[in-house]
Length: 289
Length: 319
Image 1 (spheres, rainbow over the protein chains, first blue to last red):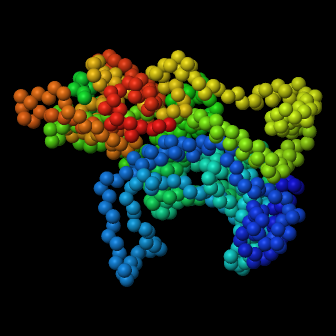
Image 2: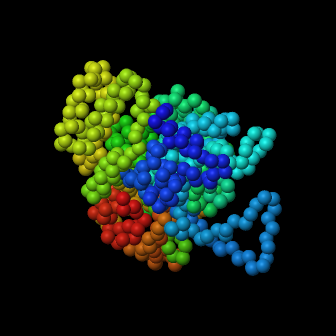
Image 3: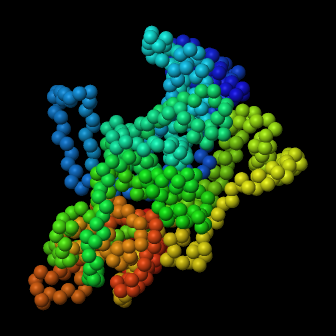
């Protein structure tokens, strides 16, 4: 693991306690950084290219633009849309439970078709409590499956019973956008999810009511990624991870429509009864236009 | 990858259309996705809407629906989505190769000793591929050639056989149907969206989308589905995209017989419903229709009447 992990190791070693979250931003940094950080980065191996390269068409992006977008426009079209009455100023609306006011739904329009904005891949490792170097395995795994350098996450608060101190590195996170996002989605949907045995698909209730859908993966799912499958022995610790799909959809339904347009499996509980085929008896030549 | 999906039977059943295409002759990057999986997600509306739910099962009437002197007609815009990625323009091609070379040049060092065990077949094969790639990048430079020839010597016969076996052969982007210009085949113009048009046995307006009158107590989607089944047979796996029409077209009935009654329709309104085909093929019944074709938007211009094309062209995909 030597050369690959060198910079990650360095990153961990050089993380001072209570350092800001984005310590690793210097790895992708350009010359605009301060002198001290550029001095530090001299003796590190830069794992990430300094620039994004567009080396070809992305399959899912093309599919979205060619098929999904048009279909979503038809599916989410609402002919009898009425804008909600505005809440007058000074009136405070109390909602029941732990809910907050959502923005009023907007009229359906061609420029408001739901779209995938970003995918967050995040992992938290309990083993990092004992030694922060235990985080390396998860760090490398996330980097392998996403192709991007993860961002280190330090704990905000200390929790005494868990022996967690504030500012200790406890997890890592990657935010995918653009081509990389679609490529990751493609991999997930075509390779990983079909091989997750006995996973019934995302539940119907998936979504946070503002158009984002999240899902968690067990540690065993990590080995289903083609990048890790071949070098499974090289990763000492497998870790579970969360994936969050952030979309511009306004409702759960729209977000689910969008994701299922990318072939994301969803559970269907109440299937409609089968079509009675003989409902319309074969009518002889209706006069056609 | 495909076989995995097929084995697992993703809820979003890949249309067997794309499977058939892959088995026979499908070029490399596929773009066939199952739009039908929308139905799984929006279990509330579209899946029910794909099934006759309204009162038609209660009141089965074959009377034509006439509103304000206009006959209401439902048409089906049945499309086959692109199966492969679109062709690149020469500029795009150049740009992508340039970017690829830049990326390779600026890439972080690859930890080969991490990914390959020393002396393994995989390592040797990777070294060979690397030599080939650097040979390609510097094209005429002798250094790359030298390196690759050196690698060739190191490789054993066994490696070469393994490399041949694992080599991915790309299929042709141009299919047999393209060469023969077989407009009835679903395996033509793989990178384009195809639309179904049918020919009716008459002189004017013979080529059209499959369409027919809406009955009383029937919604547009049911009518479009019924018409498709009547005209094109039931040997097709379809999915209607929602219940709302994507376009409409008005025309005056040419032989409006005003004499028999005042309620006789004077015109007609056609509402077009969007649908995707996943598998199967049209079966001509030789009664209502005599011919059919799967055409792109641009090709459709040569088939249908100019005013018809003018009315429907904005619903169709340019790609």
